[in-house]
Amino acid sequence: MPAAYDHALASMRAESDTLLHLLATGIFHDDGAHDRIWLSAIERLMTARSRIDGNFNEYLDSYRHYPALLALWVAGVAAIAAEREGILAELLTKPTWRPQFNDRTPRCAADALRPIWLLEPTWLNQMPRWGEGARWIYPASHVLRLDARDAVNRVLPDDAAYAEACDRLECLASYVAVDAVREPSRNAPWMGEFVLDDRTDRAGNGVATRIAGEITPDWAMLAAFGNDVARATKAADDTAEFVREHGRRW
Image (cartoon, rainbow, N blue to C red; front, top):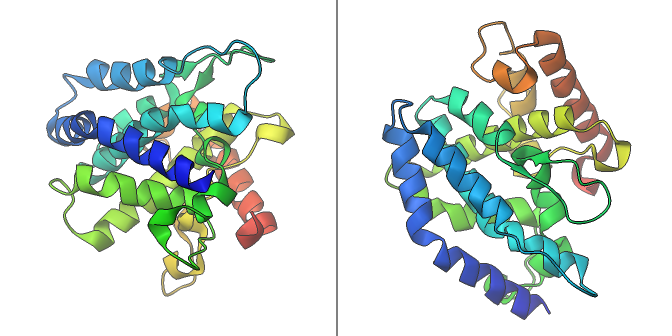
């Protein structure tokens, strides 16, 4: 199964290549005039996940959102690189997807496309692409960073800057996802490599702590929280608490 899983993800990545490059270049160089197009692209990929009839494997169903997740990741990194986090707020909140079963309330992209729910970690860690013995603490985060790298290379060629942008994206998406859902069973952040110790600065402050300090009435991401500073601060606090509680055990 891990080999088939690896092949399926690689195939979806290859088929998405042209779109991913267009998203990265378009968002990075856009002045906001074409934001509707980028939002529409993410939503169309989310809704392209076809309906299911009969029995199904939950893991093999959820990963069909991988192209949408990749597109959101690339678009988000490009928005961060261009210092356009206003469009990032929209990318995380405006595209929606309605589940086929159970609670059919539409879910925003940050909620519906959580990597920890879409990609099965055991299979990810056993994929042939890693070779023997490789085990990632956050395999969904790791594979996304690798699969998205080439698409944003022209707008963000420096590897360290790319890693920093990915950290920031995961943190901001976590805030939005946590804010979007108050149901305990689904109220988890994106839990990726941004929480690892080697992502902290010399003062020992992780990226989540640094971003939480940015939350003011003028914060570019505030629209994702209804322009409510207290609401954004709570999302940041809830994310930090989840990370402290779960850490590397997630």
